[in-house]
Length: 636
Image 1 (spheres, one colour):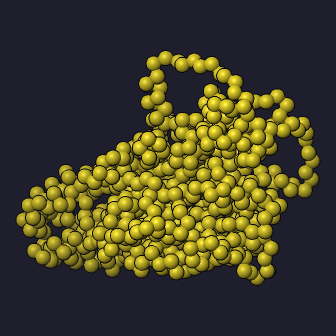
Image 2: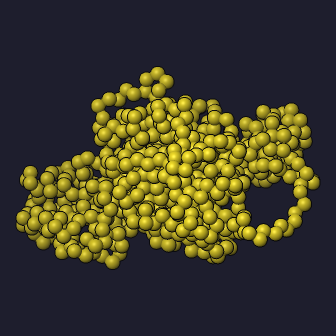
Image 3: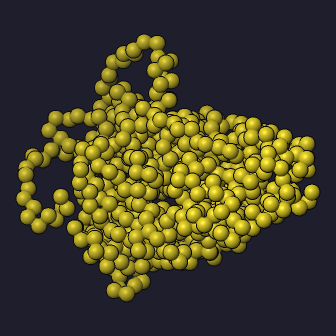
């Protein structure tokens, strides 16, 4: 019996072909299509419906066959147990196991009962087997993901163009009305900011350095940041992981229409070797104050880095401030630098060396709230391991908990659970659980998730009811769109669902238009059917409509001196006295305040806004004329 049970516990959860998460094997390697057609026992993995390969080669397939045949099972039991035993060969083995140690097979209740009935005597299954090993969770064996239609609330932004595959980010070009779209396979594509555009061009092709590692989950091209003086310098930075697992922060000089020349301009600013293939973070970004001042001698570049990978951060990287892993790093990139480097200096007020903050597992998408130029909030979503997903505001010098804590819960696989001593520890602003269990934290939040994708604090004007809320998603099923809003009465952030289960795409990132603060959702686009989507109002707006009994009319009262300290009654723009100089202290902290007043619904005859970020002023509108550009310097 012991041998039989060891076999049961040695295999992974059998994964569905339909799952659209990232393929990854138990050892964190990528499944191989070449292995798929070598299998002679676990032949269901050869299915044409599985384009992602196998985690087993012919040798492992033979070992599984020998172990199963040694059990001498009846035909009825054999048909069930063969599927279970071959689970580790499925291309998504790591993800649907839940990264548990030792491997824990989760079986859907109905199938578990059938398996139990067929094999209870031959495999000596305990009477509580299905109590211990069955689950009603979204991921259980056998499982086929429901084909949910994309919600009508999700409106594709581009209507006439095929978008790149494996999209992991979209960034507005500072000097031109176009987006740069990042693909995990190493390619940056420029697409005009026009829903009807049919034109796209390759800006940079790093596929020889980053693309060959696909489909490993968290490697390849991961992040991009335009230097604040891009309009004159043409310099931008990318974060990518090479096939030999070296993270590189590289600087490039953009050449219009010259992708090869752009590639040849690479200067490696910072690099370090990754110990594992997962948990690489990837976001790089400049703070709002630097983006507003393109004439500095250096700029702060923030770099997010995961804990290095594997389970429970076995090397203790996240808590080691001498390590780059599990950190927010910060460097000063230099405008004037030696030809052969160094290309950065170390900020004197970092915690230690390049380390700005620590205690993170895998920060997946971090963004600044642009409402403040001084000490802006840096929001980071940190992907959890077995229980919790985190939303953090990063604090300089702080320990954000991992690996001794997962969220606010003790990580039971570590020996110490008392890290938050004095002012060093920093708990998440918000956290949500993988399942609705009995923990108070989990039952108090109206949703669950498995792999958080960070977003933005909404500063647009299209949905004033969301202003100041942090918007984010969860990549794994049930693929929902969420927001959190600060409750000043209770003194905490509270969560709500914008789009419910099955109505969201699998978002790898969000994008923000810096000119108006509106958001976009970036779908991974694995099979070529996904798009970039406009940020929707979703279920919350439907609830508002349902609870509205009659139209409400209100008179607009002029308050040119902002004496009342409130926003304009239209609910979008601030009072005219504040917006005249973006200096009203009261309006500046309210919806439609200082940072958005010049991009809101203000209309002053003969005047326009000098900037979409404070400080901005209403100035005389220039006349619009056609300007010749024979050298195509604008990139049009």
